[in-house]
Length: 260
Length: 260
DNA sequence: GATCGCAAAATCGTCGACGATATGAAGATT
DNA sequence: AATCTTCATATCGTCGACGATTTTGCGATC
Image 1 (cartoon, each protein chain N blue to C red):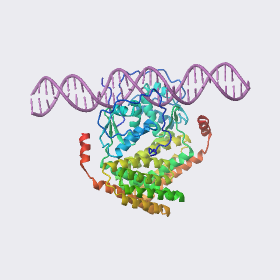
Image 2: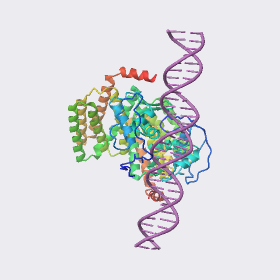
Image 3: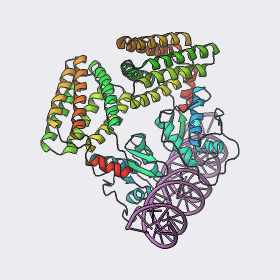
Image 4: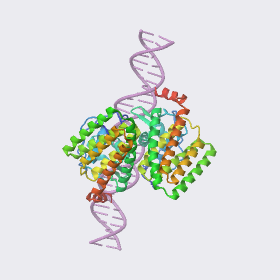
């Protein structure tokens, strides 16, 4: 339950002003926002709530996120809500249309292909660095993550499994030792998760897990070429599974209705 | 009241409220801000002014950018200034310390190495895509850019030359046909330019130009391996030149004084 | 003379309010 | 009856103001 927002350090604020926390309940739609726990700073809470709502498909693309509603939900002024929305827009989780409000982003198939292409390029570069720089302890930690995956697989609760899969990729990328590339990849993985949540999970967890094991094996043996190939094959497989499952389902129709 | 609403792309705003544009002059330091031309929307103007100030070394790292001063300079409220500052922070041009204001970013040597490493990874991937996807017309345009470089080289005005060099890299990257990777690279090239401006230009324009020509030649011949190698060699050379020229000069001392 | 503590100034974070724009509905017209 | 116009509502963009935090200048003390 750590913060997965790529920026680790400088995201603080001061919480001054008189705190009028409680207001009336939300009057609009968007019943998919869960204000989660009241701990931590508010900005991160809002961001995480929207993010989780998208991942759990409670906030389908095109859903409007009016500023007053978020203000009422979280008991803050529009200034802070607006700041969070700007950050969500930068991370391509929402789209901010001038004078027309924020909506959950709806990646087109074209965008999806570009996102996966970019992700392949980044993960290939990072796994190559990982092969060069990993230590024995790192491999042990990766094996621990793989065991976590098996455990989450038996649960069959998709969001939990997706979380462990994300963790695996991010951990492998972290071995590359380049925070900048890691940050970009974090962003891309978030967008991919959003897309996966969009086009239905389907849960090919078993075969994904196998491919993860292949990648770790190649890394541990220092075989850079095989590691890169395994990662590429894994990502291509993931993209193919997604695109073929739902080329243009009812959800896409709903998107068009909302966007018209 | 037809306020000019020449909406070009996503970065628009509405310019409402009564416009009290003129105030007193700046009272603080930062004499390096040039409000540039009064055309276009204000946000982009502020962003570009700070960016240009950094590239031209009028705003050395550690320079404070107080919000009230920017408000007076550009005749806008703190809300819009604050928005721009958030964007500048995201692009790693400034650092936003909570409750302590914004300062020009000061990349450490370690960060610099990571930035160049990331840039090599991205440009290698993009040039490989460019080899696959370029057309004959693209090569002609690249040759036109190379001619522009020669012209700028004779001028010996560093910022102009750096601009053409940036254009060249961005154009090559654009041939890759992936807007996401292109966006990341744009960010990295900005940070590199900032670093180059920091550690002194020195102007090895001639040998950079030669390397650019090599890259175009490899692309035009469809030799992916050589194109990637040429790009890598070019970037390694650029980094080496920078790091060796100024390992730790007076500027770094001034940074430490400002940061202490 | 240097150091510590206190007060004043500067600056930042947040808030509510006002005008402007887009959205949606009701009414008039063809 | 369908369409266009007009108006009311919802929502956004910007602004000035207030409280909180940090920084700084000054004076008392050792």
